[in-house]
Amino acid sequence: MSEEPGGGAIAWMARNSIAANLLMVILLAGGLWTTVTIQKEVFPQFQLDVVEVRIAYPGAAPTEVEQGVLRPVEEAVRGIEGIRELTSTAWEGRGRVTIELVSGADRMKLFQEIDQAISRIRTFPEDTEEPEVQLQARQQQVMEIGLFGDVDIWELRKLAERLRDVLIGNEYITQVELGNVPEYRTHIEIAREDLRKYGLTLGEIAEIINVSSEDIPAGTVETSAQEILLRVKERRQSADEFEQLQIISGPDGAVVRLGDIATVRDGFEEAGFHSQFNQQPAVEINIYHVGTQSPLDIAREVQEIMADFETTLPEGVNWRIDGNNAADFRDRVTLVAENGLLAILIV
Image (tube, rainbow, N blue to C red; front, side, top):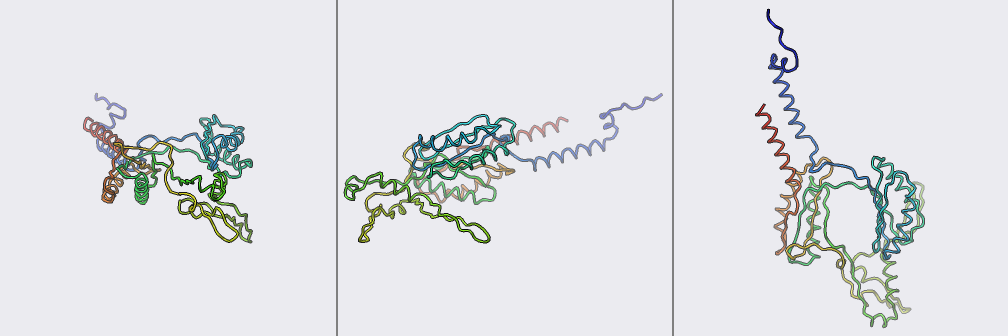
């Protein structure tokens, strides 16, 4: 008397080899398809439960920023349910409030409530600029490029800005930022003799410069279709523009401009950290990937762009790769692929 074949999936596969092989092909094809289409990231993507509020208050000391800007923001958002912690930081001319949200809370809802609460504040000093409220997101860096050389930091930053524009112009690259670079500043130096000559004080000149460094609201014009906001653009941003600033006008029509009594030059902030490499000035260009962009595609494009850009660099200026997360990603993908092939061979 013969026995019936055993049951179970393994026994069924043994009796139906064609079906088993077909299933294996389907699984392999699905794995290959997933490998091509899956979102590729160096590190796992996650959301930050942080809302950041930035407000500029030109010319104000840190204590004035704290009293006039940061405290009203803190009071406005303190009663919103879902906020875990507030951290405020004041600098000269600007302030920041970092709002940490309770884990698991509705980020978008809290962001909107915070934004609305800040927009209702009417006690900001007159010279403060529009608050910037942002829901923070973690940036995924792919590469970090360094430019360095025995040249002026001004020239080096211009080269970095040109490289940034070239990189962003590539279809595979959407986010590029400069790092460890000094901020632009316009320096104005006035001799005491010139102040006495024209009967001026530093405070008076500072007030004239301050007024000329901001755009002035000029009201609105209502039409049948819409309301048009008017704004007088008086903000000066370069040494050439400041030199033409009128300081004194006489009854006979004579005009004394800032360039007549002061040395005005464009430059950088004197304080703060400036990057160096081999005791030479250096700037960094950070390249990020957004959404479903592949780090490998971005790294390939960056290498090609840098090969062309290198030929345009002035003598004495060089570049290097300070960080390459795409290489780490490629190594991990290679390791997974090798392990997969080894598993197939063993089976």
